[in-house]
Amino acid sequence: MSSSDEWKPFLAMIAIDFAFAVVNILLKKSLQEGMNHLVFITYRLITSSIFLAPIGYFWERNGRPRLTFRILCYLFLSAIVGTSVTQYFFLLGIQYTSATFACAFINMVPVITFLMALPFGLERVNIKCNSGRAKILGTVVCIGGALMLTLYKGKPLFSFDSHYDSSASSAPISTSSAVKLVASSVSPGKWTLGVIALILGTLFWSSWFIVQSKISKRFPCQYSSTAIMTFFGAIQSAVLSLATGRNLSMWVLKGKMQIVTVLFSGMVGSGLCFVGMSWCVKKRGPVFTAAFSPLVQIMAAMIDVPLLHEQLHLGSVLGSILVMLGLYILLWGKQKEMQNKKTKLVVVQEAEEIKEQDPPIQQQITVSCDSRCS
Image (cartoon, rainbow, N blue to C red; front, side):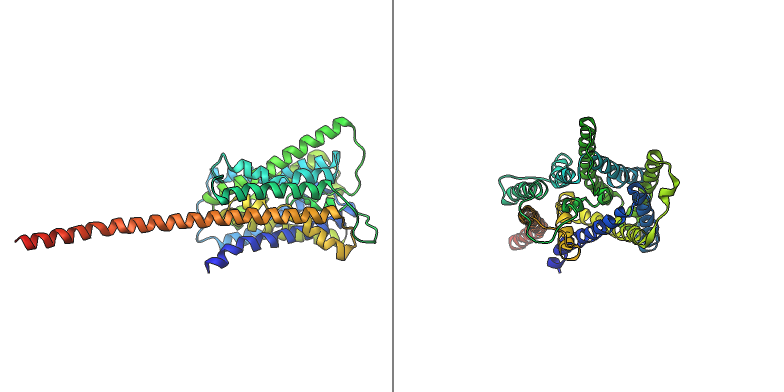
């Protein structure tokens, strides 16, 4: 049973990344039909909040702690760094640079999360131990694979023509709506602004995993916390949408594809997937959860190639292999670290049991000696 529990977070993140890959593909089709990305974010978060609210209310009503003002502030901050403002920064960055360039920042989320977790005590690295060295090596290999996946294209592996840049489908879970199919030339000033926006978006998204680890300790109810977070995010996204464009016609959904995309991405992408990630952060920490981010691009390519006949290049294959190898090394290090903690805990418990048994033994020896003396 313990072995099964150890594999549950891993399997959950694989399923989450697959769901995000499906969201990216559906979104790509909706954006081709002219759907506004900020409107999509708002509708997506509204759908998620409506979907999760009754589940959280009835499922967690018996064990839910009191919702304090401090917890609400944490959830409001989580909505900023995980849903609304972060997505806006990535959208702005992709608009002024390119989707391929943005992927280099997105795939750096695991290592930035790792570096952020160190000063907060959420992650520890002991270079003298194999687990610590494995975590560092896995992170470095994962970064190398992510950079190759993004920056190196290589030879095409199939004969059919590709009309879509596969790197655009690698947008992260919180920024999948940022896919742009046509990159326009921009001035150096706007390019600089785009780079700054991507840096802020990457820092914000990495911060979400840190904030979520704090929330999981104070308010360990994933359905309720995600429902409140997406509610705040919907309000924030609506304000951003109205501030950047006041054309009311963009709020009208056109066609079945846009409706299906909003419902699926809201209930699954921003709903169940965020619940699953919050649970994984609670069980395994922020670095473990963030380490799976590059898999979204890999899974999207795996769906794009056979179904949509998208082109696959050598760089994507080599980068994917490096990402998987780095992820395996990192997870091995995390698993080894957990085993060492369990071993130390067992030793400490055995030592305490021995200490508790020592006084009665000494008392028995004293009584027997007294009886002999008498």
